Image (cartoon, one colour):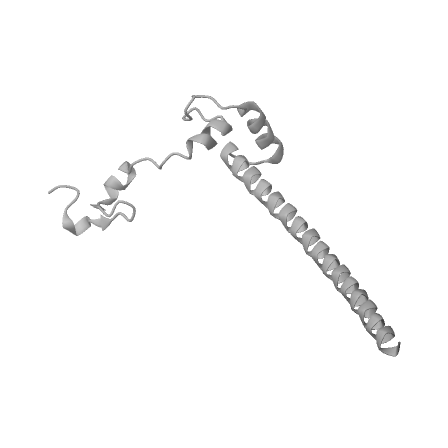
Length: 127
C-alpha cells in the first residue's frame, strides 16, 4: 500500500491534485517576484544577478525596519502613486477654480454689454 492511498488523500488547493500529508512538503516553490523588482531590490535571482542599487535599498530597510527590500520597493511605488494622485487632485481643483472665475467674468461682461445695448435703445427711443 503506497502512502497516497485514497483513504489518506487530501486535495491540494493550489494544484488540484490529491496528496497525502507526507507529500505536502514537496510542493513546488513559490513563483518568483517580478524580475524588475528583483533587479531593483538586489536579489540574486534577478536578471543581471545583482541589483541596480542593492546597498541603498538594504540600508534603507535597516533604517526603516522593513524586513525585505522588495517590500520597501512596493512601499516606495505606492507612495509615488499617492503623490501623483494628490498632485493631480490639486491641479484639477485649481482648474475648476479658474473655470469658475472665467465664467463669472464672462457673465459680468455679458451683463454690461446688455446694459449698454439697453441704454442705447432707450436713448434712441427717447430721441
